[in-house]
Length: 515
Image 1 (spheres, rainbow, N blue to C red):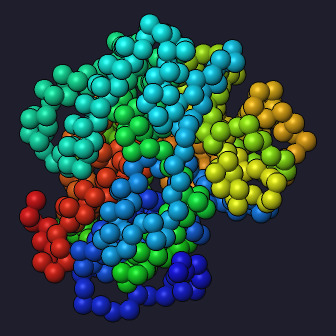
Image 2 (cartoon, helix red, strand yellow):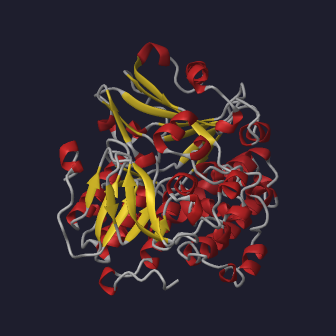
Image 3 (cartoon, helix red, strand yellow):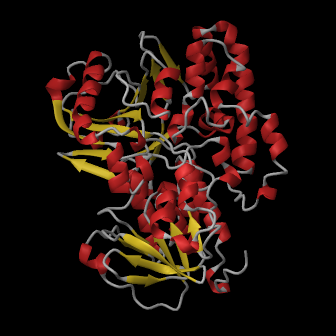
């Protein structure tokens, strides 16, 4: 059972002869890493700054409505099934995962729609409806997407690139498949219709990347969705968080809430534990950080212990865009809407330039509308609907004062939705609150308020991305969006698998000299 009693959470763990692993942060990556280390014999303590687990997958409950804060879809359920299997259980015993079809609908500014179906024949019919002359090119693109997915995810998705030499054998195949191109450039090689190009290239936004400069390796997402499907857990993605916490506690691990880490204790280049904000020290044989990777190195690891990830290097890195998210509950149903709808603005590349080059807050917007009550009505009172709408926005380097900009921007989003997808919205609004880039910085300790940590560009991927086993501090491991392989639920779960593979079994003794 998930323990939320604050008094319990600050009690010291009982003495144990087992090797101790401390995990900083309880996002999907941190929880998955905790399960894997528990399965390797470690006594695990997860330290969470907030009052509930989940990190970006935190759950908000307001006025009878339940809102998932972050991830809204699951595309690789087998990665969760692996975690349950490690604990001798089946995912289906605890989680009711439902397939979503169609995956989502794109609604363009002129009112034209493209629906993305799970069924291959239905999807090809949709492509032919939009642009018959592009159907053959679409099929060739999907073949290329499958090839990239096979190499980039199935073969390399769990491989920690610990040295540049590790990349050399796969570099020719990555180049052959177009990895040096951007996602949009690769798509444009196969289809000509501008709306199809958008429909096949927007996916990097799911992981914080600009389709015009994110490596084409991420074009695998088109095949990824089709092969493993798009799913939603009943109860919301928070049900998966609760399920993972229960696995950890079933292994004898602990979750300490309202517990913020100030410093990772480093002695002679080796992580020895953590020091909390209140001064308490927790010693550990292994430290895993699921905190934002740039925050981990800048704020938690002493500067003297860092050779690669210095402040200068982190300052020169490129960070993902941020997000403005409006959560709201309505007192009337909207049965005509799908579970996921993408409402596009009048500009595509121009808006992305504004967002990623941080020129300021554009007057136009593109929106991702999530209607979880389409699949699980229990997330709202009877006859009501729960929504969240997400707008990509620049990170905090744009200099936007969100204390004053948030409400006008929320109102602009409301007006756009009311004029398009949600007529009558303002008359049926029951509850409402927002998350801004400033919240990503203050609440989630994300550098620059970037929603997905480091941007997924070619020079910040694979070996070039922070390694899962720290290059600077022995005994320190990194998991989550900013570490290899990158952001998104499949990415952070894969990073947890890498950490699980890299950390020695507890019964072997922890010898950090073996690098």
